[in-house]
Amino acid sequence: MLNYISYSDKMRTYTTGLRIKTERIITKNDIIIMCNLLNGNCEYSNLCKFTPEGITEGGILFNFNDEFDKNWYKSVRLCVGYNGAGGNWPWINENVMTEWSGNNDIIIQTNTKFTIFLKSFHGAPLFTLDELKIWEECFKQIGIVKVGKYPSKKSLID
View 1 (cartoon, rainbow, N blue to C red):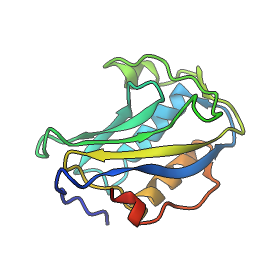
View 2 (view 1 turned 180 degrees about the vertical axis):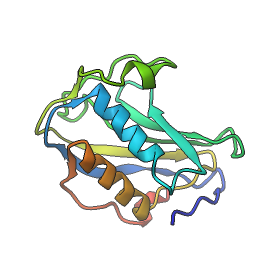
View 3 (view 1 turned 90 degrees about the vertical axis):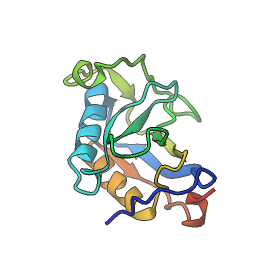
């Protein structure tokens, strides 16, 4: 079970995460599938919902439930288009979950290796190795596999 206690504003996760590789083309629809897989995971059901994040490098945003601190910020940045990833992360609006569902526009090409970046600020729960294992399993289901090691526990706390 994941630990959802809030940490002080001074504790954060700000580090590289998993090194991953696409086994096939990843589309907008695949990103929605990833969000839905995370949304359906019992470890997150009472904490948040996931949506694609409207940022240049692409990412998946934790949208925390109302009972949690409104200042919490937590994101998995996909670094699409950086470090040789060569992907494309288009503009996102509030209808992204509907607009990207069933959409086969390409986000990342086949056989692309890249490293995700983990961000957790303003007292949001820090990333854990157990949590990264959940993400790894969800990534597998959309054709993205881990090719590197997990980050150290120490690196998840900045």
